[in-house]
Length: 177
Image (cartoon, rainbow, N blue to C red):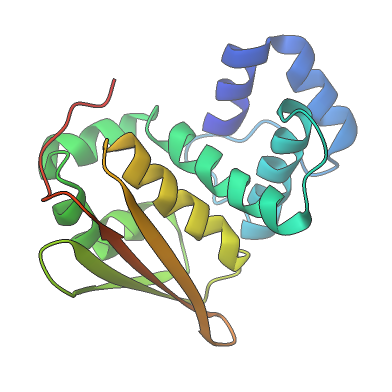
């Protein structure tokens, strides 16, 4: 639901209607619906195709869809609950990814490993998302935290993705706007 609401807020109802026409799985979901990963990916990638100027390679579409996914998530009531509980400290939030993700991504297991003051490794199991999707998700999280950094993404085994997220500045609390 948050993806369609964000599209409507940014581009108007006409953009949502265009999404319905282009994306067979796009429909109204309730906040409590368990949306299949493949459907969510298709919807996000269709939205990227509608809103991005110019052609993108498939990996770039997945990367941009992941960035959009985070921006949309940060507009939800659940994000506001999460940030009120854990604050906006990037490292703390990343280290709590298993708790946060357990509420959002059904069937996907997240685990976090502390690799130092400015580095966290997150492993996703049962990951049906393209690997670039969460690379974009975490890159956007760094950017929205007003930090510079990088995300390395690796497929460890089928359905197991590993992301090493590092940033240059010490972790600080920031306000999302």
